[in-house]
Length: 478
Image (cartoon, rainbow, N blue to C red; front, side, top):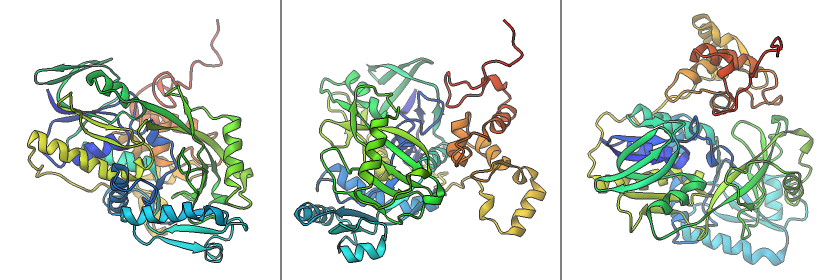
């Protein structure tokens, strides 16, 4: 029997696992997909929010500000990209100034540092491509940008290195309360545990409602995005927001930590919790609304579009804590924006609850640091020559758009919780994320996966499950 089972391998589940690994505990993360970072955590705005728009006193506000404060040191400890680039909330006319002032007051109440309301002239000096008819803006220097894939993977790898198990392709079908804890009925058998952490994203209400009479309801809120080429990456330097409305923070324009430009998202409530398709209507909205705040966005430089789902709980608040009528069941539900920013603090909170409930002792072997995949581009010419001499695979470029080597892909496959699919390699190395969107490097990456995993090319998938890429040969006959 496990002490703790965490349902869900997104940032909330991985952060909880990493913080829990500070203690002596038998714990496991179970994930229905073939990898971590396959749900909400893989498709979002990649923003570390400052924390000025959550209601003062709410859990969202508290964990947003705390998570933002933790992010920089965490990025150093776990070696993932993070940058404090600041954010601007644009007010287009004088009549909307009360709403901007309200955001400013909320930010002060939440403890956000360095907030200022800037004049049109101050904003234009910072961001020349802001629209000329803007009136003022709220500036938050503590806001940042992060790589959500690397953050999620880094948390999971560090948790795993410190003793937390991970089970993939394991879907929870039912949960039963037993005297000593819970039985989780999965497609791979029954798992027993004393405590459950419900970090299942848009499905968290499903698992909560299996064990509690006090029902919750989560709506999948779809956000569609456009990602632009690196040639557009310097169009703005800050994250540019519009004034928020009842559906969220609106369409933003932001640089990414890898040098691209991101535009989006929309906010549409849908019934299908797997509905990550993009639509013409949604992408048109992204394009038109982004132009209200930023001039001349080079939309001809779009290299891909995508959609993600936010887990919107009816009360618009994080639900974190032991369920009152299901002792031992810890909810980590309703984690929508600013969930990515908040995840370090969410993990801290969940681990503290479990430490108290289980009386956990500290893990004397806990190692709080992790080294990411080596990027040869960060080396000097001499260092790179020496690396290639020792390991020739680092001289073999596989992805020309992003200049990713065979050595990086091998590392991604062999490391803890390694890549098993094309998307797994992509999230860890960026092979396939460039201008051609994997058009040229996929066959070569598949060959490396096949060789390293010891499986046939027929077994290699895009993203696990039935997403096989090779289904026959052109010499097959009927």
